[in-house]
Image 1 (cartoon, rainbow, N blue to C red):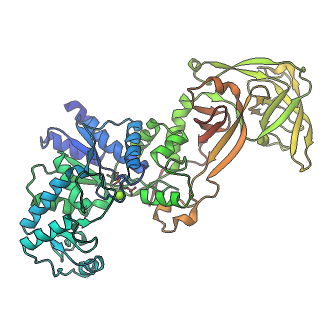
Image 2 (cartoon, rainbow, N blue to C red; image 1 turned 135 degrees about the vertical axis):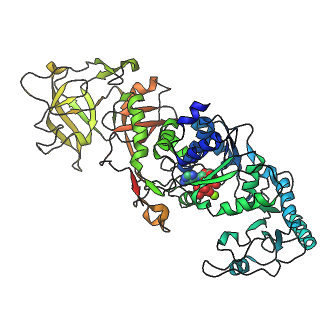
Image 3 (tube, protein in one colour; image 1 turned 60 degrees about the vertical axis):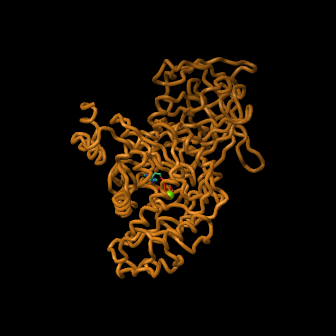
Length: 557
Ligand code: ATP
Ligand code: MG
């Protein structure tokens, strides 16, 4: 145990934990991941998952999963299920059973009564606007509500009426009696309970009142024996309430809250509410649209759990607000797939070639490797035939010395195959090239010609070796790097975020059912969606190379 602890302190939270263990403050570390089931998990949650489960793992402690279902109007079963699936897919195992804040509603209620009895909480009958007005501002102190001096009996009676559904939403709330003149706005009598009438009550006991995050979170942490309650920086001020409540109720375990910076990712939005706006406005097709930075979107896009957890490792945990470059995420999946993905040829924009000097009805079988550096991934057979397809971008009518592909003057090598030379093209009435006529050099299979140098190698597929396929090419969803901080983020949607191409792929994929991810030679990494029989859809995971120099991956705000 000692040895493990010594080496696992590579961020400020782990340093705190290391010292807590060294000083015997705790014998066992206990963290939790507390999602609100009001949407799907995104990459920001992956960061929180890696931190909380990572700590439990490094220090042989525990990490609980607790759904923060304190708002019945937002909680949905489908979100709970998707969150559970995503956590399991990422490979994390929570401690014991899954917890729900609603399990503790009775206990929370008792603690609220305790605060009322200690004259530390009261039922306020001001309405929402009045509460806001009485709260004051950063420069102006707040003033006491006229209901602040209710007796204990009056408060108990009103609180019970709230709970019995006798008071309407918005007409009463339970507030902590702290200090309306506090320099911290948050300590100006924060709301602990509000009335919500909801049909959507998953709890057996019918509730008309629901605890706020501030009231429920600290108590739930304490009940579960959490030692370190880790959350993002926007909760820094809430820590004051967290500590105040635990100090003022009779409860044994006192967890401590620590804050770290939220993940922000270039050209992306990481907030469930804003992601929901993208869905509502039909900018994407759902939570698991491959353009979404959600775990399920990334999964459909072809990211692996390991690439996501690796990314989280690379960004680390600090208190500094950074925007992480998208290329760092792409780099994590690219490095992994470069090693694992078998190569195959796919033509995204097909154009037909007829090799007129190749014998009619003749077919050659070429045995080619599935991976250039990993012979253990085996070989496959490519058919060679006089009719083949190449990509439109690999042929140019104009001759340019910098263009290293096929022209009417320039020879090119077909990958794993012969050198060909174009000599004539046939166009349709719209002036689009329909067929390129070529000649091949029969002496160049796997050999360079003696007397000349071939500049380029292009990919191809023979017309008797193809399957039709649809390719979904993804680009960033926003045109500005920081949409998260722009109120009008909907004005900056990239209209080219999805481009669909209909093309061809080697029919060899049909026999390889379990293989879903490929590197398409010269095109990029693609992931096969499980679709109908012989109708293939491939999502582009990422490009083969990064487009720009990637020196400084973390942009300072
Ligand atoms: P959202 O704004 O997307 O709804 P949230 O903070 O309200 O996010 P919760 O479901 O309450 O989401 O979050 C569960 C945990 O994940 C919390 O501990 C929260 O701090 C953490 N978390 C959420 N977003 C991020 C992020 N972008 N970076 C790091 N941690 C995050
Ligand atoms: Mg939230």
